[in-house]
Image (tube, rainbow, N blue to C red):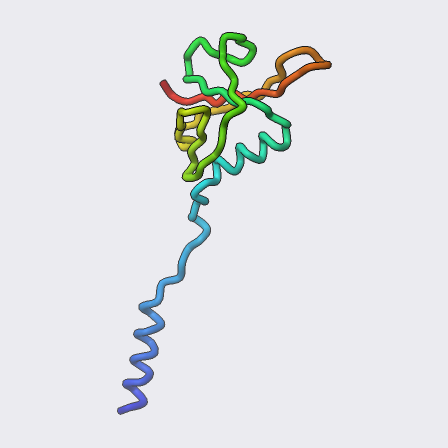
Length: 113
């Protein structure tokens, strides 16, 4: 009888354990990390945000590009004093401003209106 109880206990213990499925887990700061990688690879020096369908676009000189930016975590980017949720990012654009001798690579981040 003890044998059956021991086997039953072991089977119940094994069946109650759940295997974690890490395949569907998404990294908490993955979008920010991807953008940081692109910024490093492309040599981006300044960022700016824009909304989809707005009149801002790469090449518009009225846009203020900021070199004061950071990625504080949780898929957010800080550009100057403003924080933007990268989970809402729809696209980004990279372009070069200035002449070939004195150029600056810039990134525009596009978000919904």
